Image (cartoon, rainbow, N blue to C red; front, top):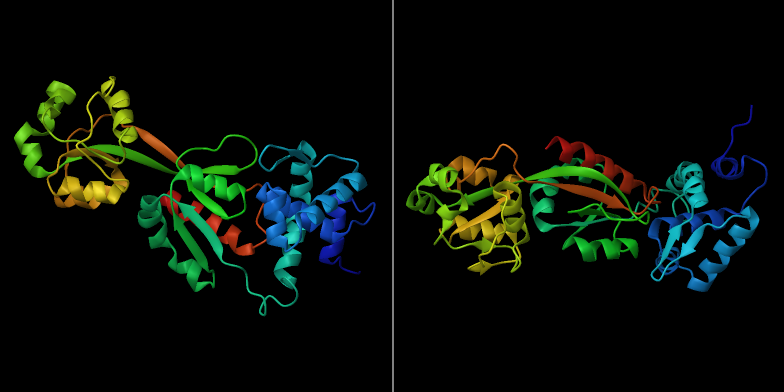
Length: 319
């Protein structure tokens, strides 16, 4: 019995074996589907944008189906595109893994995986887990940054995976819950003793912190405002004494005696254990923020992207 090759598997997955379709058209479709942009797909494929547009229109004519809805910025997959991508992604990626860009996978190793996210999550939850991936030959290019611009660059094809502090809206990006961040109210031991410690806060509420400087990530203190609303049921009215757009720096300032702040528990667990920081409040229902692992729909043509994604889902969720 003759075994099907990857080309036949792609054709059968796409059209039920009824008619062959040019693999180049399918590759272009899958790249546009993943990047959400004709421009980004053209850059990744080494083609001009008009060529990508022509190939997609040709495929749409052959299938007699619309594949993408044109948006002000980029494109969104039409309903049939989701079905088509699901049917061709495995055989097409298998073909890419075996053949590479133009020959042996040994001659053309997988491209680096571009991963981005908040510096604190990357530093404390991701970087310590990477050794097994690197040992397998995975190359990583990691970029810290703020969620919103990182998601925009993910849509444009700049990154393969992004750790996001919120679930992106719409169908242009696929996301899965990755990690829960619990937020805690902390200060240095000297300030805790001065205000009467957690017992005083439990009795008097946030009024116990009157006169203690607030150290925050940003001028609008989003993390502290959320804690106040969720835990104390009231609006935060005070202004920060110090702001620094780096939670590690906020932690260092608080531990050094500058004042109080609200931080993710994972970020300051060592300091809480050692006594360098004091937990001022321990509510039964602390504020929790869910972080998401986000990528463009479908699996990447780079097989190492799936390896990194699965590794993060396993190790970070367990952490």
